[in-house]
Image (cartoon, rainbow, N blue to C red; front, side, top):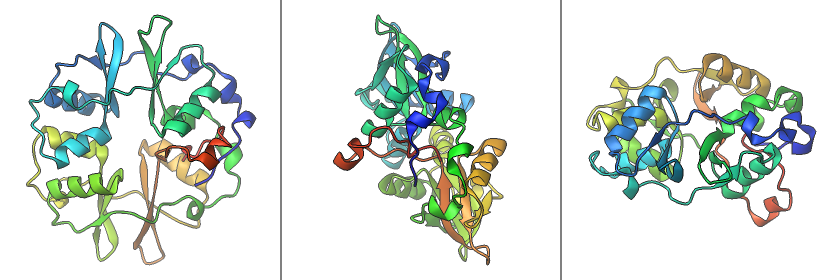
Length: 274
């Protein structure tokens, strides 16, 4: 992981309105989990805003749905019971640098943007920052080895989907790599789990539902190569392999962690650019 000085980045002098997604899909508190999963799968979005008369009151994310799947929660339950109600919001005229500070301090991936009356105006994600920050200029000659996550969840192909969901939830990881003698043969992500939960295929084996072939990279390559590969292929994970083709790590769009006291002393850093 690395951080770059936010004040060096032109993007951070823009208002959050210039980065946010304006046409946000909203659902009511009475919407079923099944319908939420269907919408998120259909539109390939990582979150849903729960609102009441355009006033945002909660959010449901892919991570939430993996947790519900792992706990065998009925799809007919209303989202109001399981949404995260502690929304972090900003006004439309907030500077991007200040919004970024909230990402780091609260350890979130989605920031809800509201107008002066508190009504939903848009949403901005960590991905929006990464795509607009001109990150290549600040990466320099860093290699994949400097930012990869070696605590990757490796699963055999005969693992049940429901068990994979439970392990992803307990490990709080965004993907599981399916391996055969450590060689990656597939990958299952939080986004995949949303659709699997919706269709109730927990008893299937992950070899039957995994995404394959796997996008791989070596740790000697530059981080900029990984970023460009993810942007080009529109993917959020790359599996890092060694010279024998064995899985050693994962590179993913970074999930920010809540700031510690030490990190709060340096609030304007963006550890989630990669």
